[in-house]
Image 1 (tube, rainbow, N blue to C red):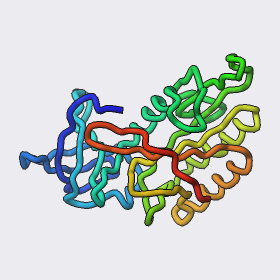
Image 2 (cartoon, rainbow, N blue to C red):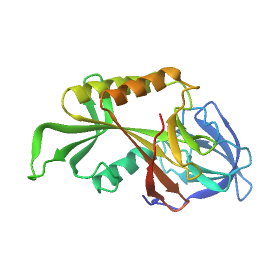
Image 3 (cartoon, one colour):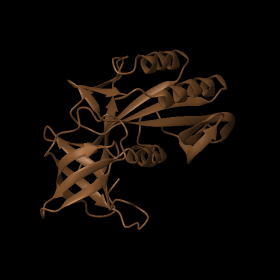
Image 4 (cartoon, helix red, strand yellow):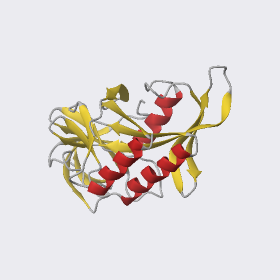
Length: 238
């Protein structure tokens, strides 16, 4: 995924009220950017760290900029939580993600029972037809939390995340395919695990989902000021 416009460079002054961040641009001016990440952003916040913003031309927006990434330990970390959904749609649709090849008719934001999933597609049979009931629901989560060389999710207690896992179990029991797709927007990790210390209930829900046949796929993305590119699938250690 290439950024459609040139990004604006600056340095982080502070992040506050969850959805706001003050940034000092290279020309010395200070602006307030929208932060889409509602989590704690632990391990990806450093005052005076380099950041990149996108400029938004929308008169309805209270802030002109959206915060895209931050430089941590020499690597860019993508913190815009709307990008993983777009990346998943692009990469799954193009057959880039191992384990998710052969999914067609991909759609975004599809409701099933009491949940709305990020992606839904049809699984093509060997004969080239999409069989009845062979749909595939995919829920996408943005991952920025790191501990050592391990990527972790979530970085805050998430009841909504547990609800999605429970619904994915019902999707699987109905005869369809159910996938939990974690998108890691940083390169300084090599393995993925649930953040049990932060949300033990989420960890237990993920354990049960895996036992019931829900698939867990973790994709690592390389983030740069020019683009976000697919890198590899990370191993999972429950």
